[in-house]
Image 1 (cartoon, rainbow, N blue to C red):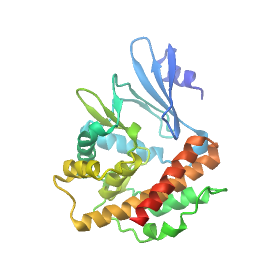
Image 2 (cartoon, rainbow, N blue to C red; image 1 turned 90 degrees about the horizontal axis):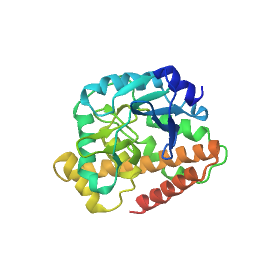
Image 3 (cartoon, rainbow, N blue to C red; image 1 turned 90 degrees about the vertical axis):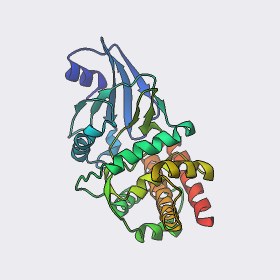
Image 4 (cartoon, one colour; image 1 turned 45 degrees about the vertical axis):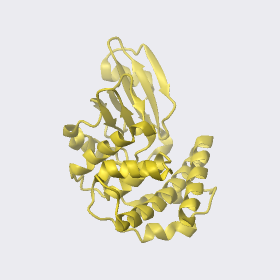
Length: 270
């Protein structure tokens, strides 16, 4: 269904304007101007069929509603994954000046200790991405054992995809948005999702995040665990980016795969 028809179906009126949001990597997202307000419309791309469980995402959105982490949800279709939410005026996506506030957002989700009943199966995701690749750009097999040896502890509902665009900051309130990948997982996965997806390599910035999240610096056992999750992230999302490049042939996915592979090698060498 075309975006114009979707908006007419939801609001019983025609949109005045559609503004494409360039940062979307798995969906087509638009800021939609209506007669009396603006909303954000998410339309999943057809090539991503089978990658997401939209019934689960709908359940997660209900679970986290009391936490007030997401903008007001206006419409959600459990079959198609089409979603429409309140537009947040004057919001900025993540940059390092918000590192402490980002830690508090992630901490809020984890401390709620919610459980969806569905595990974020890292190994299954890895094979799901890898098996769709017909022409790999890089060979990550030297680090696959980090995924095989991974132990998940104290699983709670996690976001699992804390990229720059999924963190919104305003003068009065902050948001952690888009729960397509959300499921039960080890909170350390989310911590390293934030660190790696935002390419935070500066030790001082990492420590600032850790102090805000833990209330202290990590001990050696925690550092070892964070290291393993860091490697896992680079492998997992390198495979994802290669899959997406094979599917879409867009340079952005090739760039992501290249950066993940570079960081993977740097991490292993350390």
